Length: 361
Figure (cartoon, rainbow, N blue to C red):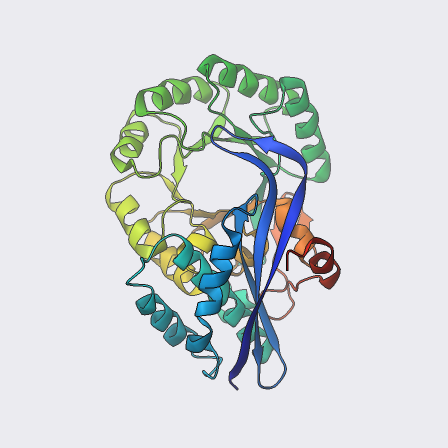
């Protein structure tokens, strides 16, 4: 079976309300939807996204430029296609948009492969579990008041979440501590609270804030300093008992390798788009396992389940609801854990009504 066609569609999904982190103002997520169609009529799907649809057409242009390296190829030669695309990106760089574009194509090819064999991807990769821990990540934003935080946290608990993530990085670190304190009082001691500074602090600020957050049982501090500052990451990690989670802004196994060598974090957070798709994500999971390091996937909840169900060192999956409208199928959660989809491929397929409603083409 061969790949007959690679095609793309552009959509822009509005959020229910604008949200803010220490470094972002977000009102929509723009997506390039990638479809690979086989000569037998089966389809595989993947996507890349940008905040507020900024530079989305650049993503689309790069993805479509890969068509000659995909079309006419055997659909199961996924590693070979990955390597050819990777080499073709060398002159323009093997980070950033090129890798995000590669990821969308690679994920679509794996989805097609799973459908061809009529098996869910996590089983094809070598299943190790049927469910995985998750945390609510679609709320508790820095732009919300304390009252809004506590109200939303209660909703998350009612929805069945046992864990949730609070954004920090206020101009006054004491405000972050007050927010964490109020949130802990609102949800009690049994609910796990994570924190994310979104790269907004310098090492000294992160250490000061981290020490204060520890007093309220915060389970990790995510991206405390800018992503490129691996030395700063390591300094924060050395000075705190609070685990440091990071890695979502690094690219491919080479970026993950550098983080591990720098001892920059306790928990590695690979992002499917920045990894370069499921092909590379599997390698990153194995790389982290060789250093006895846990991983927790970043965004791309639906498609990251293929890794979560097959990588023993994956401790959780971020539950981000932004992309749920893209799919006909919905995530299933029981007792604070996401269930592995038993459908073929990734287990999720694009919803034509959503595409029509939010199309940018």
